[in-house]
Amino acid sequence: MTPLHRNILARHKTRIKGALRLLPFRSRSLGISQPVFIYEPPDLRKQPEVHLAYFFRGHEREWVNIDEDESRERTSIEDLDALIVSGKIPPVAAIMPGLCSIDNKTHSLGINMMGNLPEPRAGLGTGRFWDFLTLELIPYIEARYGKWLQNGKRLTAGFSLGGYTASMLAAGLPGYFDDVGIYDGLHMYDSQIDIRTGEKDTIWCESPVFDAALGKPEDRTAQALRYWNPTELIKNADPVTYHELSETTFWVRSAAADGNKGNLERTRYFVDLLRDSGITAGFNRVAFHSEAEHTWHWNDRFLRLFLLNALDDIR
Image (cartoon, rainbow, N blue to C red):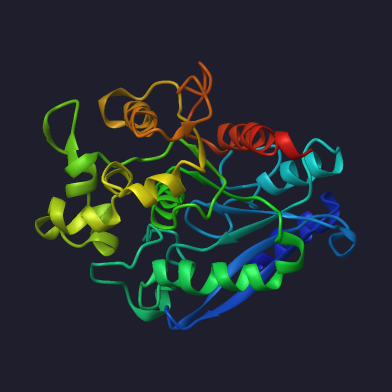
């Protein structure tokens, strides 16, 4: 446990009624122990039913670190806890796994990484994060909290690249999540063709940020990326998968303005794809607020709205 982890746990011990824990999850897929923050709602043992949420960004600290940027007054988990304590939403357990290197500079995207990885001490292990999430962590959490989850909802929320991970899991595990919340996500285009230019999407196809996760730009063909493209998985789904996806509601919003390289147009594209595919998009507007920015303050506001909407029918 790092000093930052200790500080995060100490802060939440005095500010929430539930419990925040740090789980050093030993992953066979990654070949390392991967840190996972877990929030448990108040009086868990006495609860007849609990709902489950997975939160994604990059580093496991991000949803619970008050100093992640300068915009925050509370952490996401403080907000979640307050909603539960006030009775505005039912009890929810939240799972926040680390998906990147220890220094937060190399992002796995939550997939089985295809490029050259940093040295083993970087915290990425083998890079098989999809296997870690789908074959190890999710089954472990289902077993650990199973007696509370029998009739509970499964939710996931993602901010920025975490939005990509949330959409990838929803598309790759069709029907598992009841609700998916994405704020200002970096969505992929079909076949990696940017519909605004008619040319290849330079961010996903060329950015060095993704060298470790996706390989060098010369190796990032549309065919190579197809397996990890949520947009294509949804658009090309077979009838059975479509039926499973139709049971999931996507709550997707973006920052207000971002120019030709940002996420507003990508979010509109993704929402249009969902609706054209007969999949429910819960929000009518794409831009979250006229002043919304790519910050934790705005993501935390989005998270509160997402939880209130996704859990409204079971309060």
